[in-house]
Amino acid sequence: MLSSRVTVDPTAVVAPVSPRLFGTLVEHMGRCVYEGIFDPGDVNADASGIRSDVVDLTRELGVGPVRYPGGNFVSGYDWQEGVGPERTPRLDLAWHSIEPNTFGLHEFMDWTTRVGAEPMLAVNLGTRGVAEAVELVEYANLPGGTRFADLRRANGAEEPFGIKLWCLGNEMDGPWQIGHRSAAEYGSTAAQAARAMKFIDPSIELVICGSSHDRMPTFGSWERTVLELAYDDIDYISMHRYYEKTGDDRVGYLASAVGMDSFIDTVVAICDEVGAARGSAHKINLSFDEWNVEIRVQDPAHDWAVAPRLSEDVHFAEDAVVIGGLLISLLRHSDRVAVACFAQLVNVMAPIRTERGVAWRQPSYYPLALTSRFARGEVLRVDIQSSDTVSSATRGDVDPVDAVVTRDPADGSISVFGINRSVTDDVAIEVSIPEGMHVVDHLELGGDPDATNTAEHPDRVIPMSSAAHSVDGTLLRATLPPATWSVITLAG
Image (tube, rainbow, N blue to C red; front, side, top):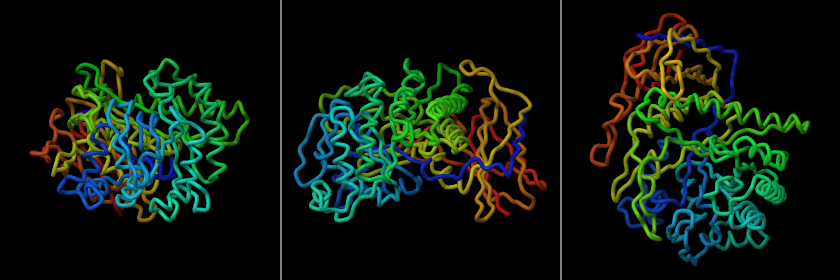
């Protein structure tokens, strides 16, 4: 058996736990919106076409911000096509689909209210630009007395939407992106849009596009260029990444958070380098607003269809463990990662799957739901010392355990989130805790790494209660089985 000691410094608070770390993406892609959250023909749909079963699962998931309407989709989208009584179907060039426009901004805002989420709106800096971005802020956030604010009122929303989080386009470094441009071209446009949007509403928070992922040939230079052009006008820079298993290297896959840690640290360094060179007191934080495990499914052929089945990945137990590990990384970096969005919410690489009349949880659902539920208060800094390492082909020798600890100052409760990256050995962990604590819950997720959930068998992979723990004074001892993610909550 391997062993690790997790030393918690109760005086070293990394950052408060923000609900913005538990966001997601709802994109007009595949069956995420249509036949996902919106399906007037489904037995579970209400009078407005919203699926109540998906609403219930989204509430249970504890979603924070929801980035909308994309994703690649936004770079060819005209938001005015999705508001008002007249809706005309249009071509969606991003996904080679037909966009019916029956679900748009008003429907999205109604849905976010129902699920208790924060809207995070992306503007089209691909085929449109600064003028449209300004008009959309006016439409969404001004009370009235102007053209677009009054148009919102005429379309049924008397009060402003009050959207605070805004994305300045999506993945504009990618050649696949509609309206793709160089870093200098995009940075200049984004800076103009940011200034103009804040003229309309100075309270909004803006996310500029970073690299589409850290393997892009322009990664690093892209960030520096766009930040140098827009540094004082924006609040966050975006990060996107999908983590994959290489061959049969399961240990390397379980250690995906090593890559996320490095990616975050690199972008933080670039932000601070640019800020220091400018002599600016302004600090740019990170919006990791698209993350997941790698897309594996081969999409069927479709020719300008409405809601074709795209990227409907099956998530297995091992994927859920990896996702739990990536959440540990995000919490560990919560002093600089201020926003994070799991991509996507329904059907497309998603924790929630639907078919007509039924919705179910993929294994990936559980670490997202349990982390948003149990990570409360503040993240504490920890030091992990292990007896040995485990070897991987893609990441070399890695610590068998990764962990993070949160504490709720309101009641003193503690949550320990941990992952065992070994695929063969249990790990015995010891965690330093305050005197007088007892275990309230100990849940673990894993088991058969190739198991999954289906509509017919929705509970094959679920969190299981564990009794493999004890408390001795100021020490929590627990056993983490191979290839599992766990959360242990304690109270005084």
